[in-house]
Length: 171
Image (cartoon, rainbow, N blue to C red):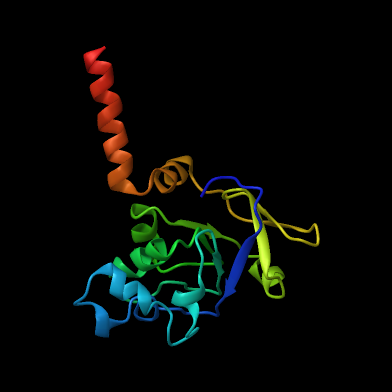
């Protein structure tokens, strides 16, 4: 997620959203296109049909708990979710999200976002701006994770590095 001046729609979720809600087990035999169509359908039935590229999820504690299925993060990436903002994440989901290019912002102040429908990420991993002019601070995201998310994930970041190294070798 790059720094942006655009106001982004917020999708609100509660605590303990598990990977089965993000990538329902009944659809795991299908590709990500089908799995994504069912993302969060038990919590927000209209989510997959109405989410737009650049939208943001604001959730409670333990977002992405459960299994290690990377399709949970992949479904959000496929649908165009720009970031998830929550106080805490399931450890495996956290790693999968960044590996696939999804920015996660750890923010203890998410309760300030409960009545908001839009926000602007002023500086990824530092703070958010609300239409009221309030500022909500998040924990800093290490540069290497931000770079990996901005590149589109771990594989994309490694391809960039290999291309850069090849250019240096050929120069």
